[in-house]
Image (cartoon, rainbow, N blue to C red; front, side):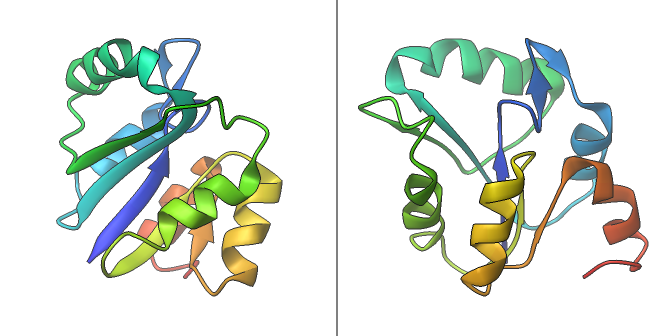
Length: 120
């Protein structure tokens, strides 16, 4: 089982932690894949943030080109993740796109309800 979680705006906002997301990710047993539309140029900074926040992840998915405006990029990458059971993203269009593709997707603000079994 795997979870795909967006980095910018979902795990961190301007380098500051989104605590509900981080707290949830620290409790899961699923493989965590972190994604950003940003480029490989940011890898070192993002890996530092993930380590700082204690997020153990299988892979940090970044692009060779800026994909911030390409919503389909995240869907293309999601389809490569084995046994994907959940995606977490702060972008309404991305969550809607995941859901229309049959991927269970939630917003960071819904993490607690999802964890409690209210959403799912």
